[in-house]
Image (cartoon, rainbow, N blue to C red; front, side):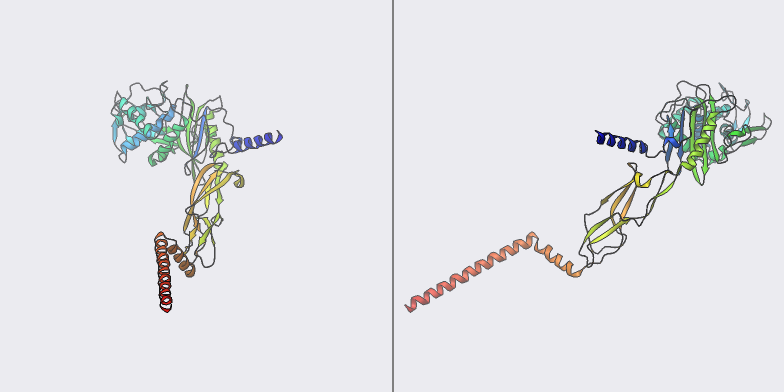
Length: 434
């Protein structure tokens, strides 16, 4: 019974250690207690570092504007200087945060994009939607089509602003997909990193000063949330969705995305910014590149035939391997290997660096990389062994055996015939003498 309990305890410990191969232990993650959902991701290594309720359906709030911006950037392309005139239809039903656009006001596509991304302006979102989609319904169809294209299987859009609609749902995982897509659009990232924008006077408005609603990139509204490494992307709130932020940041050349939704606030703090900042700072140190395999590591030896001097050749990885893994990694415990040989044995001559198999590398049971196994050195061929092997191969062929059998049979028949002939000859001589 003691042995069984010890085994079960060891098994549980192993499962807990390696329960999430691409995520760090929850013990190291800062407490995320004021937000319903969270997700933090390393762009360069396509790795989700940690998440909370990532598949739970939620209201998207301002994260909707990521999709609105992406479609607008695709539509306008390099023609951001295009002038757009605001119409009555554009402003129909506008509510929430806006920059007070006027009917008949003329702005460029770039100005509308900046108002959308920096200021989170709902009126700018509406103007963009009508311009890009031809109608509100047309634009919403485009939004959902793009979501499907990006694999956002649990997302339904019903408006371009994020204003509450009980039918509009998403998940943090899906938000991550549109966030990554927009992050890779240079126009978006350039605009999203602006702390503020001074919009020139238009035909119907004085100069406007737009402050970035993402306090992680701007000190202008509330400096307590400022994060020097932050580069964007989007922030906002609704009563039903809570406070939400989609943040990007760069630490030591590595890019990170972080999403926090359903956060609350009190008289002093908006927790979406605080917890996003905590997660980004944690991510920058919790993971790092680790050398998990050296190019000189001997993986196995393979038998060699027809060699003049050796009977085995050593196999090595084709190159060293670094993986982006938790900083508290125990390589001896967490990294395992599995190799498969192309052939059970090799035949000389063999060249140094010749592929002879495949090596799989696992982190806590999850396959992380596949490398070629190559020979450590060259092996020359023995001419004597080659000739003997050739003779052996010829001798063992069915054709040779068949011919040899015929020859043997013929030889036996010949010997018998000669023996019979000699016997008869002797017998005739004996009769004559008698």
